[in-house]
Length: 66
Image (tube, rainbow, N blue to C red):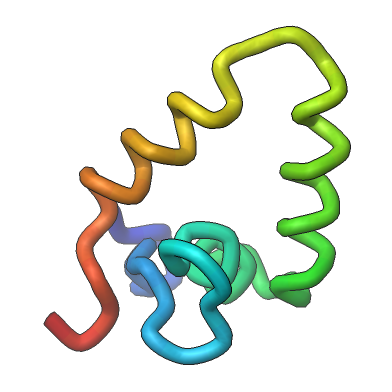
């Protein structure tokens, strides 16, 4: 997925903890990875399919450099 400024959404290879999804999203939007991880953890308190969405993104988003 390419944004208007030419960046691509990819899973991070460095700075990743589990699958690189949060670090990849953080790099794409220009945030710190810890902020995206915190938002994900806080969102897990709310009802919804957060973990399922994370797994789907882990499968769908390509790994950086590959």
